[in-house]
Length: 147
Image (cartoon, rainbow, N blue to C red):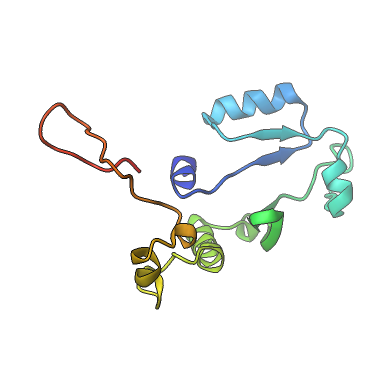
């Protein structure tokens, strides 16, 4: 799903207590392209008090998924100790939709006042803008707007 996350202006990061070599092997085995961060000193585990006390020899973190708003503000937390505590893609889709509704004034282009704002040139409310001159994608007669 990561390519779709990136396409939707959403970022993903993974934090593990594994060393960098193990993390790299795991990331490569998945074919993952998002950041995998190594925390062998368990700073995150201690700061968030998420030590998995049922596995003392390995001292892992309880798996969590955090849905964050801009500024790293927590929107929702999933505790993934059990498989059923982990979010599904459908749940993340709903959560991220709700975050974007909250932070993007242009999320619903049918909202009152948005068309008028666009027409008067008030583009601060919008993520995209049009170009003065269209970019020609081909040598033919077709012209498109690069987004």
